[in-house]
Amino acid sequence: MKKDILLLAILLSFSCHSSEYGVGYTTCIKESDGSTENILTCIKSEYADQRKQVENFIIKNFKQDKSMFMSLEKLNKSLDSAISDKCNVYFLLDGDRGSISEAQCELDELLTYKKLLNDFYEMHNAG
Image 1 (cartoon, rainbow, N blue to C red):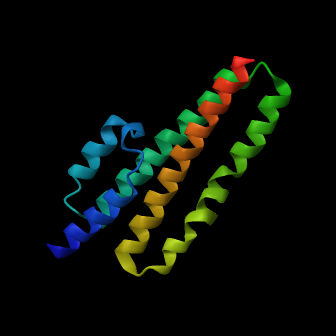
Image 2 (cartoon, helix red, strand yellow):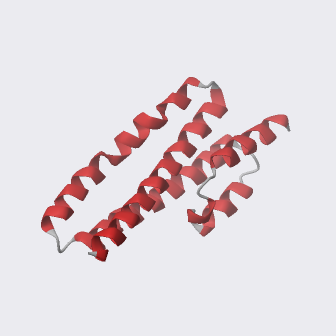
């Protein structure tokens, strides 16, 4: 029981982007029963969904500007590695705490990048 509460507390401490998660993510986490495997499945699934949204956003909004598109595509290809490097510190935590914290950090970093990309797009279009 304490393990479940600790895992949920860790997960919620990272959840600064709660309004940006997909609808199914919150439900998935709530239905995970505190199982590390289930939580990691939820996080990885949400990461994949958000990653696809980033790729589609770049294609949809920057395809016409070849130079901008090429620069963003280059950045996009290195994104997963950069995010992983930043969140790798959580690997130093033992067991479930480290695994969940690292995966949640990666998801939250992706959401931060997604917001940055959206803000950049709005400024780019403003003139």
